[in-house]
Amino acid sequence: MLSVRNLTKSYRAAGEEIAVLRGVDLDIKAGERVALTGESGSGKSTLLHLIAGLDAADDGEIVLDGANVTKLSDAERAALRRGRLGLVFQQFNLIPSLNIGDNLAFQARIAGRHDAAWHGELVKRLGLTPLLRRYPEQLSGGQQQRVAIGRALATRPLLLLADEPTGNLDEATADGVLALTRDLVERTGCGFLMVTHSARLAATLDRHVTLHAGRIA
Image 1 (tube, helix red, strand yellow):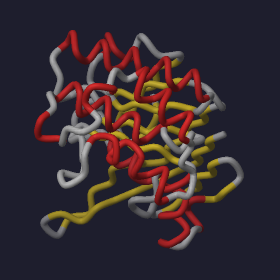
Image 2 (cartoon, one colour):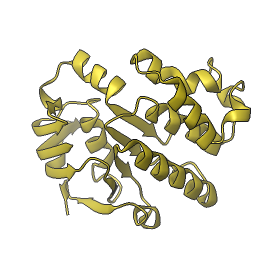
Image 3 (cartoon, one colour):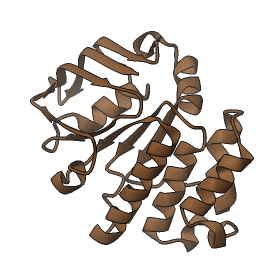
Image 4 (cartoon, helix red, strand yellow):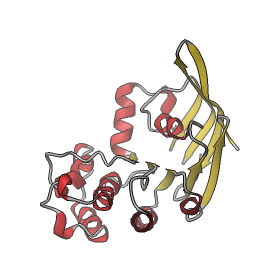
């Protein structure tokens, strides 16, 4: 479902070229849940951003369900993110002016993939029924992250990408949020790639890979 081959990425800082990714290879099967760990600065977030088409690689190839992400235009990558990728970040990135019901449906609606029945199931499974008329600032961190996860899954994406999705949550809340995410990912059958610093949380997924010195160890 996802194939990454010989992916490289460098950045220029203070006049110096810094290689972040040095030839990354990674495969994820449909429905597979994979944890990505590595020391700070190892390129974990960079890899997720490249897979999502939020940045361009220097070399290598990213193929998602037959689509070569590295050869798509900016507009084509944006369309890919709308309809085939779900993105969840440490910062919840909810829209302050929209209530929770509208935040949850936002991505699916702009992608033309809103499904009222699936929306209702997400509301119930995520425990959001009493919160739909509230606004993001009225919710706890754990509640906001549940909304962000639901929004990302509302389109039934091929792949859910999550960058430290529990990094702002206490341990008990993080465990609950991740358990819900695993359950919903299984329900949709999408792939799941999660960046985390926690070996404990990484161990709850199907597979655990480590990024070290710009390569998958």
